[in-house]
Image 1 (cartoon, rainbow, N blue to C red):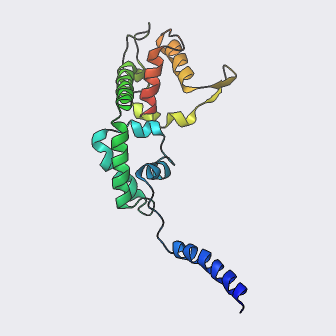
Image 2: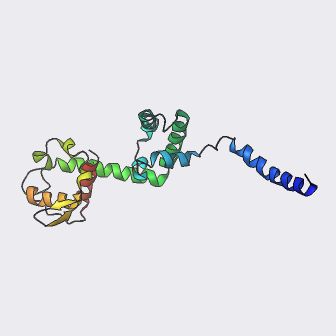
Image 3: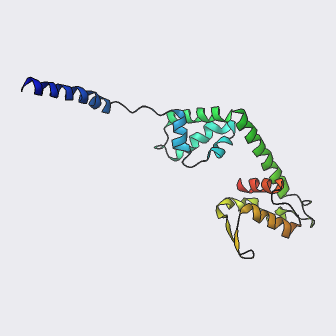
Length: 186
């Protein structure tokens, strides 16, 4: 082998060896934020994560981990719980979570309120088991044969309030929104 060939071989080897060595190094561990995005955001929206009860974070993450231990390791679950705790401690998130819980409470009360309309009945008269609405959000929008168009859940609530209870509420009335939040959480 000539000197020129040897130098080319040595230069190629010098560039290849670090790459070969790096291929055997363990992959860098993802950050906790990246874990949250990769593992949790696949199924859960940031709104849902931000609404978590701070007391139940570890319990909830552990329950998710146990559903599929190959997806989230126990070390990763600790990191994820720490990021969620840090995230939901943000004052804006706390204010949002508080407003959401207040709307939920108002919606639950409105569902049983027989003074909402003129007919003296409440939603709970026709729907004594509110849990029947679990996953109701998945059924909307849906076709309304009377209106001959698709309607959303909020519009359906407004129609039911008007027709069954005798409550004339504007489409943007906060009470419709509160009932909507309540029904979506069942």
